Image (cartoon, rainbow, N blue to C red):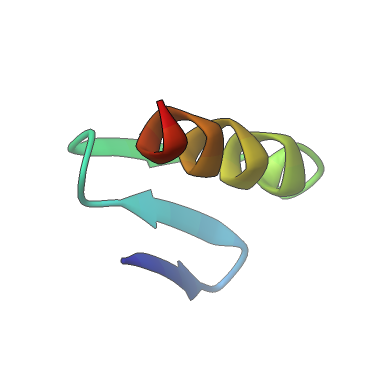
Length: 37
């Protein structure tokens, strides 16, 4: 569901682009929590 490419995090579920390589982990956790709720 979440793809990593050249430091970019593609979240298809939210149709958003995240280019911050330092916050990709935080964004990933946030996305997982969104699915759980």
